Image (cartoon, rainbow, N blue to C red; front, side, top):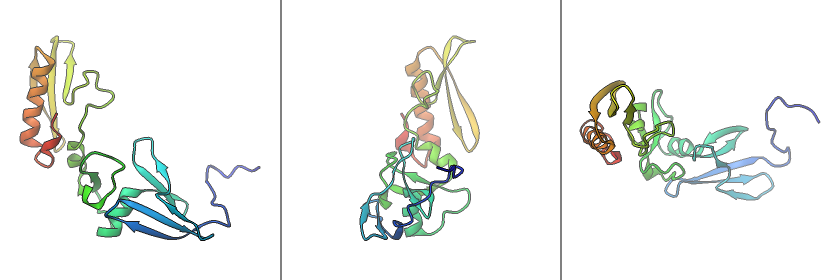
Length: 171
């Protein structure tokens, strides 16, 4: 045994000859050197995205499908899953967005959010629920509220106005 420095080497007898991309289904197939066909090869990342190895490099399947149909992804742009389902890689579910637009598609509070409500946190100094929203790298403070529901309503109202790229993602 030898340490390959963390690089995973492909078996020399089996390598990818061809990749077939099915953008309407959001799937790929690999034709291997031994003649076998691997449908939907690869696995899920820890974040729910599909990935596969191409020429020894892990590649996100949604990026591969987008580039197959539309060409290179411009600098500063990302591929967004419109319906929020990270392994739904149908081309009709993918769109080119900037980081702020992609963040608008977040449907739930982040795991680190202790309130469990998107855009709402507890303000210990005031003893009230605080609502905030971000747009184009600016944080807007929407106020402090006696109930978490009032704070959620404030956030949802603001999201419907300023998150115009993806208004259906408001809580």
